[in-house]
Image (cartoon, rainbow, N blue to C red; front, side, top):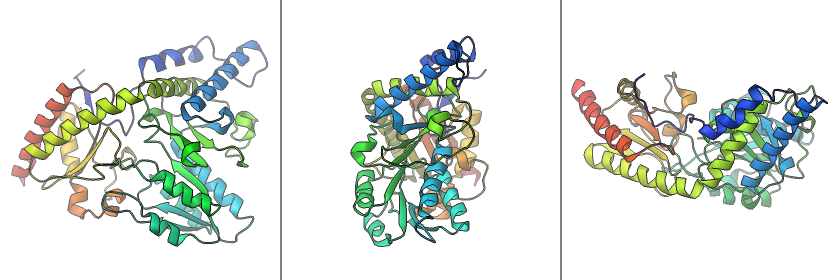
Length: 384
């Protein structure tokens, strides 16, 4: 196999070796159903609860506030539909506020809720991708039941003023939901300190397995079931638990939490070096997103005169993996809603690429990628 240089960690990540090691027994000897009454099932049940405790400790929250899901998308759906469903008891047309640059798991759930009679306001963002808090306060209505603002954007990496937005929600007696899929495992996340009521996380973004995530619901929230059937997850999500996935996500969470400070420093240093090379060596490169409040591993830039998708394809032939938009938008001809929301022209949106670093990336890989991008950009521009 050819050697791959992987720079698309916002799409997914390679599980840590310790994660695979932790999961393996629950595919083999310890394969019991956690709901079974015998010892084999009890082993799995204890593993699930230990994983819940481990994850809760990384967030400084109570274990009973963690509900395992199939991933961040399910957790987003659960949070939004819970808020809307509860509000229907009080309001004929509940109102939800979110931002124009949310992940599609939030945006498309909001669109579906609109078809069911829920009113939704999509807040604008500035050129850096930061939500307008003054606008947030202005659009609150008596029937507003939920404010949903992502922690960090999956395309441009901008970190939102989550604590301030949560305080606005709290002052007005409104639930606050945060999609923290890109943030958890990348930067410190403390939902109680921030004032977050509901929070979504996915395991495969922090060097854990795919197909697993969780919803945090602070104590005092009368959460309603997402899936009905058995009594799993405190009767809130029916279905046999994904024990290997849960164990693997907890192992990834513990490792990510332990190395977080070193990881942030190293990835930010590498990212800044990468950015500097592109900005100084390739004319017409423009950074998308904030240069100050940004995920430490995220790079997003528009390269004038270049189609981002074409550059991604050529880099793939060289064994370098980056993306032109979020992984959830790959294969779509539509322009990135995030790029347009921050004020980029259609041409700038089409020329945008995302590079996201991980703990295994090296300076040598960055140098090789920067040299290759410079060469391929020249080739693409000459072809025009």
